[in-house]
Image (cartoon, rainbow, N blue to C red; front, side):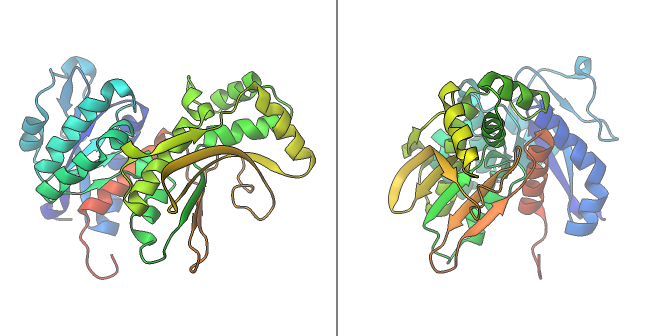
Length: 335
């Protein structure tokens, strides 16, 4: 492909997701150029205390060769980047930093692709205004279900279908744990099994409390109905030691307990996460292991369901790749 297809990317965050993102782009850039007419390439990587330019062959230099962090604006200008990708942990401590850098990029006309959730919950309106000012786009697939393309459905694919409800199991860890509880495990044993399989975080409290599922549905509702996530009230029912009994009881009746996050256009700015029994025919019942699913209720068009999508650093990295292509690829014909 010609030089016009090259797209510079600045990456913020170099943990498992950021590393997988760099690897995916490096391994597949020729295929992406052939299929989509764009060749994204990471030009620089930034972390809290350092940053680096990538070597000519696209590899990240060893840490001793990294330098001190520079202002993001300088890095964007020096690299000519068109996309700023955020793979920072979704922690309160990094919220303001993530918001500040995303706003700065958007105002300069640089598209933002993020897997970081924290600033989306608190700075949604500010981010939208910055994108409007800069004529840029922000895409959040990595924050709404990793490789599950629920965010794309909420943002564009449901337009005109009058979606009225969102009902989801967007946290694979909880689904896995509930199924293990139903099979007879204790809570600690179920969590341990999830960790061994690389499903659960070292601290799964946000998963078990329902906070993570609520966050994802807050963001999906914001895309679908224009809600400001900062104003959404959340009511959750956690998975704890007492959940084992109801999970096993449901299993004896050929049903499955699920942690269902739900929102309705008729109950604005409220997200519930409840432990519900599901039965055959329900897409949430059919989930196994760490699978995820979202059901968009459209009264006239019928329910629209998306399920699957790997819950892993690679899954989140692939969502970042997808969004990077989406904001940069030429749009003509069927594309």
